[in-house]
Length: 244
Length: 306
Figure (tube, rainbow over the protein chains, first blue to last red):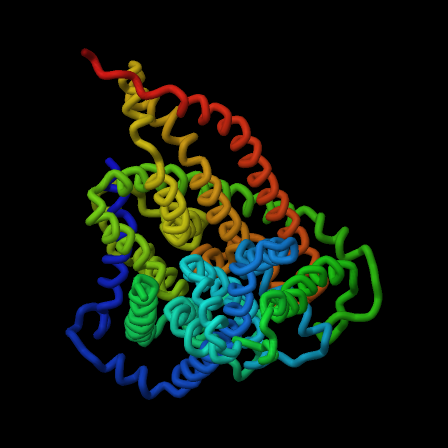
């Protein structure tokens, strides 16, 4: 009985990949022409570049903010940090719709025009909590006596950071970064709300392509996209498991 | 990244300042905007689609018109249905995977998680193709005589429910599995020894035992379901708008930001209420069962027959 349930999602996935094999339309034959069309479609290429740029920027800032926060959270059990812990988990509970709207209202009120920058700011906002908790999970194993030892040996703070802390938490940071990157690339609703003309990202483009008929390019695009996110996610998994 | 001055030996307390940037960021980009949602509900839309300077209660009262209430009701019961289905499906799956050989468990989890790694919209699109009137599935069902000719699988609430369940299911399975993995199955064996049927043991021991997982799963399913927008938009057709769709409509083609605000504020209140209710319920259940749990641990499992 339970096995049937197990296979339900799998079946959907298989059906999905079956659908995505319609390279030439209704099985008119295996053809790579959709992929070719894909690479020549300027709008799609623009959207892809936008997506990558946004994801990149969002990831960097999220990592900086999130790692610092995770460090402080792990180190101290003070009242302030406990409050912070709750604060940082709040964005995780909110559906993207509400986050999108709230940010849109912010930007409209401040008179900021919508564009790639606002998209980046929005992405950072929802990525950063994920990074914080990912790094935090990794930090649980961190041995603070190492820092004490280094201090006793006379090392300065910056040196301690560079030579001891950074290498040890690097896998956690990278895992967090990959997570942020994937989340950013995947996001649709928030981007839809806070983006302006010219700041279309891939998911938004896919959405409009779906809405306005379904050129077979979408299939090819889907496969490419799937491959990309799969690779990134697998890399993230691998890094989370790596023992230092 | 270190922002500490280099000469401090007792860098400890300065370290805690490392969380300040994030705190500041979230205040500006998350908490203030959330407040704005409530504030803007009291404003008047201006002609060019922005927000005028005036304050009014009209927008809010306009929300409680009948057509919005219908949408809210629909959102509610669709989300509840989706959550119920997800729970019914995920508990057996979590139980089953936790029973498996540890070697293979990892692979089953991967199988469940892999779909999440594909883009959300693409998965919806794939379902659109599957449920398409001229698609494989429908032709099959028609041939088998299971459905009649005027039944469609797409562009209705049925599609919305199925696709939402599909997207939410992994989020329900994972917390349940995590709780199921930590569960002490000898308690079930003890219950069986004491004469309970399999079903009774499952219901009275296992389910309360994975309480935490169930609560997480409930939260992780209900909240996204309430806020869903893309799914109803792409597979729901004209008649299945949920709150998310109405809000989005007020942002794009029927632009009226204060109204969008008011609707969002309403959604926010609904979600916050449900989340709080769930959290409080969990606390209460935890307290009661915490005591029972202690009692259970005091008695050793029933001795095997001599």
